[in-house]
Length: 88
Image (cartoon, rainbow, N blue to C red; front, side):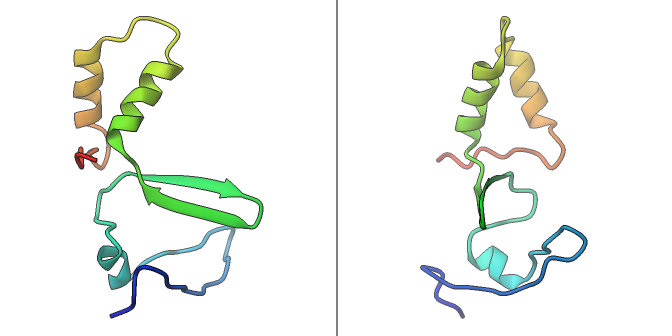
């Protein structure tokens, strides 16, 4: 089993995409349906789990009008792939 404190995998860009798959994803803490945050910089892509509490803050921050918290909670619960609050 690879050491997940630091490891590297190599692939190629094909059709403007890079496919990430394998048992190592679950071992690294990524599970099916988990929302992820993707940050892109020149020559660098960082993928981390999306903290759903931070996502809630983004919804409030992007809004220019009143937020109905009940409706937003319902929307997040039914979001495609379901956003599961990981408690972090």
